[in-house]
Length: 126
Image 1 (cartoon, rainbow, N blue to C red):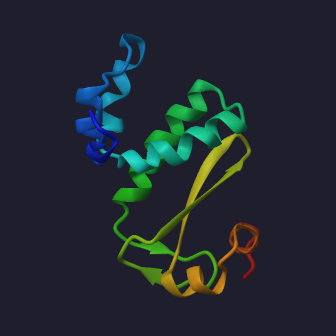
Image 2: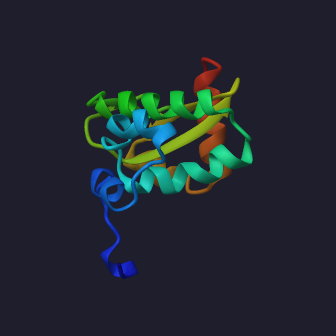
């Protein structure tokens, strides 16, 4: 397969590169996520040396997050119905997902500014 034919569907990706048998139980949950999610999550899982249970929990949490249908921006607290920039942080050994609205994505262009907005939201402030 050429790089230009790289699949965007995780279900298609799993047909091309099946999971090892000991991870086969994760196929249904992985098939519901975009390939880009996995590409983005591998460095996070590795850099924080998360245990297998935390990785599996993050997969389930990602599907639940994606299926919400509306998301509250942690920076301005407005609700949005269309997916936008999804951000992740690792807190207490778990991965948490947040989605900035388009206005706040422009307002907080750097990763540090985005992280500060999320931390403030997590602590109950704005």
